[in-house]
Length: 315
Image (cartoon, rainbow, N blue to C red):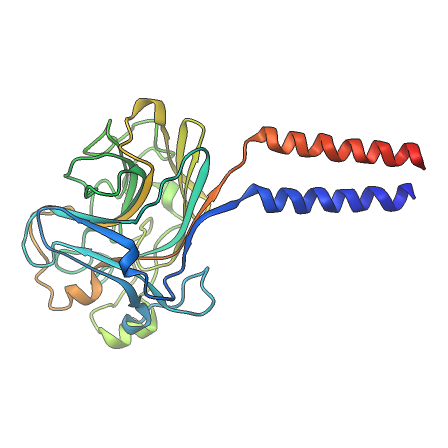
């Protein structure tokens, strides 16, 4: 009896922990048109968005957490007006509290040729937590959240960035919130990113997409992005690599929603004839999951330990 009872309870512990560890709070894979359920907030320039975008039409393969489908959320800013600006989108009516993790697939597309990129190619893919969801979150705007950004092409001296109400123009170079010594793509910490060719299908559609991207860059590839809010800390990781950690006691959050966005860091627009087709942030497979308090695991373990002990006495 004892030899059979303990493995059964061990399996119960694993199953219970798995089911409770990541309780789903919000999920969206964009395979069905969800446009009506998102609020779009824009800065001072033009913006464009397609929340039911078939990204295979520009030669991008299915995201890593998709089941072969190719629908996602396409975000763009400052395509024509030539004004330093950005935009953001938030899911309607969402509010996240306690400990949770936001996970999603992200792709930053930019116009070639690579590595340097074509006209106006240096834009930011952006994403964050703690916003009201009613104010545009962008690099030159009024911040009400904690958020993170990366250039696609590595064309800035600050290609990996973090922002908050305490750092409205980004946490500066050398700030201890960053895991790397520098925000610049050539820093060896980011060497696992970049050095990628355009997907063959995109090159076939747009012959300018030649060459390889710069080492250390975020663009032209799917990345699995994670923003984790745990206690008074928010962390940003890309493909399992920690990029930044922010102490939430040092900032004031405007709300409890999340956002995704796109910003141009220049006061001019691209003159590339294909900028509307090639210069954008793509988001797919958004999941927000609750992280239970450690005490819940302790109580679960004690309960099952008691059952094991009782079983031993009976045997």
